[in-house]
Image (cartoon, rainbow, N blue to C red; front, top):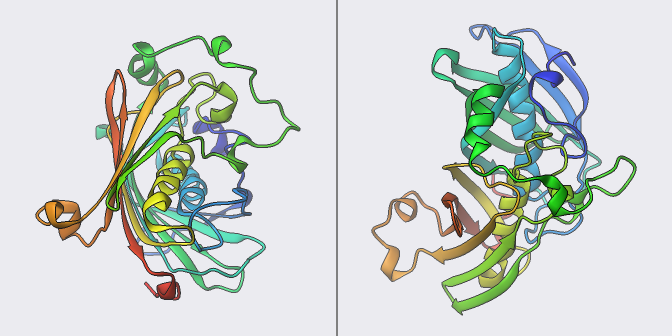
Length: 300
């Protein structure tokens, strides 16, 4: 796959297989990038076979490959997910792998923006999830400027991941100081203090990938709703990258009586997780539509 060098995402974070480029399907002029991927995250809070965090990880990487294929400048760029909307069909049965397809919906590379539609199906063709991502497209020089203020030596944060050892994304949940304040509010801390935990995500410029942020957000939601919940929909809005050495505060709230007028509740979401750095401020938030376990066979 000729576009892999243009995204700076490598193993172990990159775990796509059988990558294929498919010809444009009119009226679109953009190619489709297809792949397969297997489940890696062993245990998670949701009742579905794949967690939304892991789906988001693999599909967002696939989407960045589709964006790189559309980018007329064939150099390394950084595709930062600014906004993602995941819809999950609620399949709980095991599957050996999922098949992904991604195609650019709209692109304005002069303004450094591209939006990609991505879908995952079972090998039998059943829709598993859909993801729509808008990326900011940064050159290497711009990425260096973005991270310059927060740059720290990775040597101070443990031993780097080595090929042949277990992937850090098998167990990405590292919540500390968990406090359940009420039935509608909980908080916790995540310390980004291990360079190996970010392995493969922007090599040489360690930053926390969505797999870490979303997995920990889901684990915190579990403290309110219990294990085995169904996240039918999730919307991720990112303000900035969370970088090596940061301490992040996670706070989840439900759309209880005090939240009736908020925009995310009006949009049908039931929970919001805010992620904030102790020093650099807001990283972003994740809104989720949590359904009862009985609803897991919902169809999009």
